Length: 106
Image (cartoon, rainbow, N blue to C red; front, side):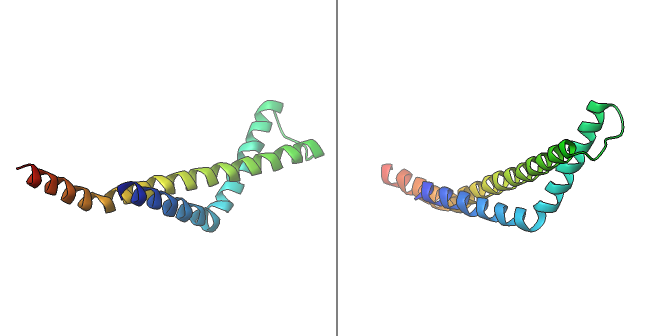
């Protein structure tokens, strides 16, 4: 019973984390991915960057990496919080079972 509650909590938490990403995470992922890539390209080149095809392609890849990173963090944090909630929900039953075992031994 305990493992089922924890697994269910993990799945629910990951789902909520995914939904939170869809609502709140796409724009920050887009922003941090593009900005971070642009700063990295500027540091590698050593100055201003011209908007050529290769630079635009690298920025698009950076945007995708930024969005995927924010999605991964949202889902993992949601799963961790869901697992913690699953443990908290199953705690009273585990304590009750432990108490019943102690009374049966006595």
